[in-house]
Image (cartoon, rainbow, N blue to C red; front, top):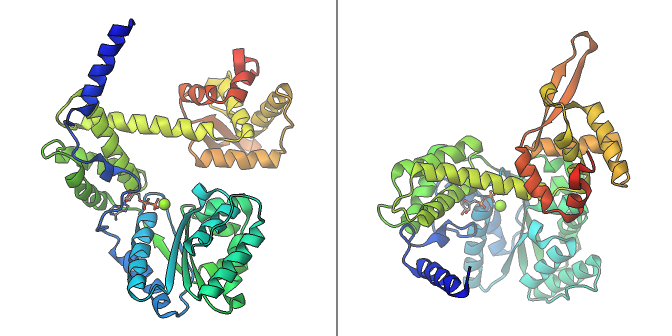
Length: 410
Ligand SMILES: Nc1ncnc2c1ncn2[C@@H]1O[C@H](COP(=O)(O)OP(=O)(O)O)[C@@H](O)[C@H]1O
Ligand SMILES: [Mg+2]
């Protein structure tokens, strides 16, 4: 392309970009962190959470609380909503309650989570250099000095515990007995329903003095949620009701996930817009679904640990498609030999089983029990995603790509 041509291209690209959208009025309201003024179908949960936290306004100890439910059931939205209102109310009443919301997955480490709690009390902590224990000390000291009530929401707390164990939760739950003045209440949120099994019984019992379970939304509830957003996001007439219904139905058939529904709506709108269409049609939704699924899988695969990738490579290179997968024994054998070729120390059979169940849960592989007649039963494992998707994800992993180059590992 010569330069003048490129210039024309860019000009028209910018112009198209600047031109008024044919579809959206305000796409931002479809983004993940937008929280609307009203959260339909979560009135009960909002009320329950607010009632549990309300005693803090009078300085009375409120119960710790554990919230769980699948992704996209409104846990984050509801807790941020209630926290914001609690903070507002507290400011009117001399600010005796401080609130702090931390997403543990994004914060990443115990240290950073603890530092965020400090910053809710306007206590600055250096990025590095202190031990987590020292940061906690400073937090408790500050809390006693101020004599305030700190309400903490630890969102996606399962990610913290999976990485670091439940030590921080333990310290926080027992802090009230150590503090002379000031109090802490914890709200832990988890997308993982089995997370409780990872907790020490003492931590579990103090964290789950109260529990709220967020159930998946039904198709008609998701429809209401979408209708509310669509009014703000789309130009009048650009989103037929049948398109919106399809998004709600697809998201509900998965697991009642409002985030998925909003994503479908947004991506379908973007696809329609890029086509220059004036309406978002059902086919745009189907295309959006394929795009989201593909992007999600590539992302999940790319972030897997090396040993899981090696397992997938064994399944990928398995030349016996007709046999429908490998037995656990065959898979382990293949895994060990790939590890040898890659000069990586293989993990034990047990650890590999653990990785396999994780891959199964992610929907990347499928493990089925098959009968061997009078020889009993065995598990057969096969890939559940297209080989193309796997190739794309692994090519982005430089280390892995170099191992698999020219099928060297096969
Ligand atoms: N009842 C609701 N009303 C309006 N929007 C909602 C509702 N529940 C969830 N959402 C929206 O759906 C998306 C996912 O919700 P979120 O609270 O992040 O779910 P979770 O934390 O349970 O994974 C967010 O964009 C949120 O604003
Ligand atoms: Mg969340």
